[in-house]
Amino acid sequence: MRTSINMRTSVKVDQIKPSATIAVSSKAMDLKAQGRDIISLGAGEPDFDTPEHIREAAIAAIHAGKTRYTQVDGTPALKEAIVHKFHTQNELDFGLDQVIVSNGAKQSLYNLMVAVLNKDDEVIVPAPYWVSYPDMVKLADAEPAILAATAEHDYKITPKLLENTINENTRMVIFNSPSNPTGKVYTEEEYRALGEVLIEHPKVYIACDDIYEHIYWGSSPYRTFLNACPEMSERTVVINGVSKGYAMTGWRIGYLAGPADLVKAMKKVQGQSTSCASSISQAAAEAALLGPQDCVEEMRMAFEERYNYIRGALNELPGVECPDCDGAFYAFPSFQGFMDGMDDVASDVELAGWFLEEAGVATVPGSAFGAPGHLRLSYASSMEELEDAIGRIRRAMNSYSNAA
Image 1 (cartoon, rainbow, N blue to C red):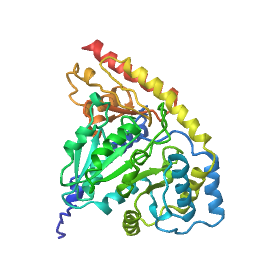
Image 2 (image 1 turned 45 degrees about the vertical axis):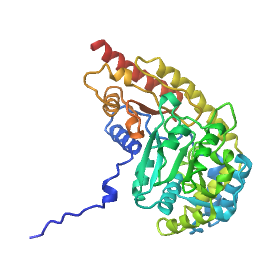
Image 3 (image 1 turned 30 degrees about the vertical axis):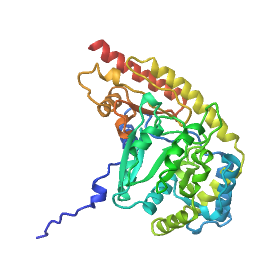
Image 4 (image 1 turned 90 degrees about the horizontal axis):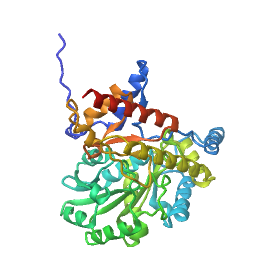
């Protein structure tokens, strides 16, 4: 008789949650497979095809036999392209030994945390936050210190809030600008004010997640933290990639630039986990960074047009407040006013489920981003699909209100 064995998982894994955005997308795909008419506004993925010249560069790489392992930290050609990008677009100068290429910006950030964090370290995570930040911190044996940035402060942390949160265990702070999920962008002046706090805490690393850099329509030029605080280059890293700006999510290429010793430590982590990123994808990313950029501008303009539509449409709904933003491709409205009038829905998680069932529209609950009462709606969809989705949401809300 076979004895059953209770296999256990690690404490580290037991304390983290599955990605809410991936869960919503998976559920929407399952319902579609069952024949349901579902519009998914859950995933953060551009609906555009990868530009043709980038696809052609990948095909040429295949024909040229560039199908083998590359250096763990990326091909010299791609790293040179990244250095060039930082110099020409961001006024930042890095050496090749200060750059590492990973399987997406997500891995760059995860490798950073594994390379830096220890037990009892804390990482300041401004909320609303990208869903993976807190759980990445936990996987690196550290603790996330959630710092709420409210509507009162335009969903951005202030120097006073930052100063009051830093303690002897603080090891890192994460900035994400434009933000997922709010689309908010830190100005150079705001970064400078935050830097004046951080300059007094030399053991704290600054991690800037700039993955939505190219999806930006603010009135002033885009700036990252190092533009405002260049004197903090020895403990600041900049994370970016080609997924969002070049519609290359499936190609899985991200990169990080920072202090050479830290990048060397990250290379060790990557060398013992995934090793190099795809050689073909690296060739495509090189073409993306060095090739024509008009495709990026065309996509940016489309996202801005969609933003203008969806923000206005959401603010016309009863009990809904959708703030303005300067980038990314997410609307992050509060539905609290509408929920307050519902007898059978008590949370944004339940509301997201209600919209999925009653309207056939998939959204992501704001509580997954540290902001209960909100929903995140991705407008990385065609205008026609967005208009259909908002129409469905409006009809479901009106039906509920009329029946009440």
